Length: 83
Image (cartoon, rainbow, N blue to C red; front, side, top):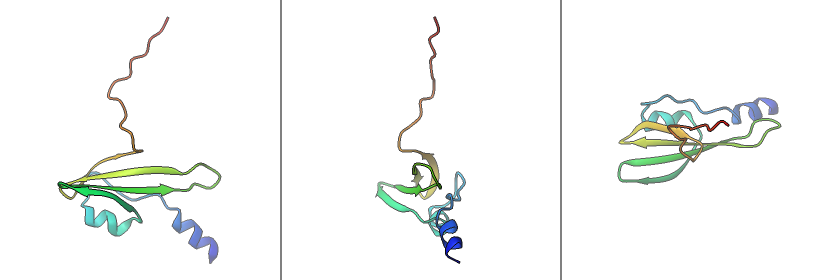
């Protein structure tokens, strides 16, 4: 029984883009980081067995999930210079 509790507490978040904020919070154990001006940000930290923690941030605009990242926006373009 203890193993089952450990496994379920380490589940990855369930979500989809456009999901309502209420549904997301209902199905995921997350921490609210900020809420202002129609934007809400939640944080979820997963602890994979034997690996470093993985932090994800979930951004809601007007109650809908619009962005997910690790706390830093990825570049749109990566320029590779080769000699």
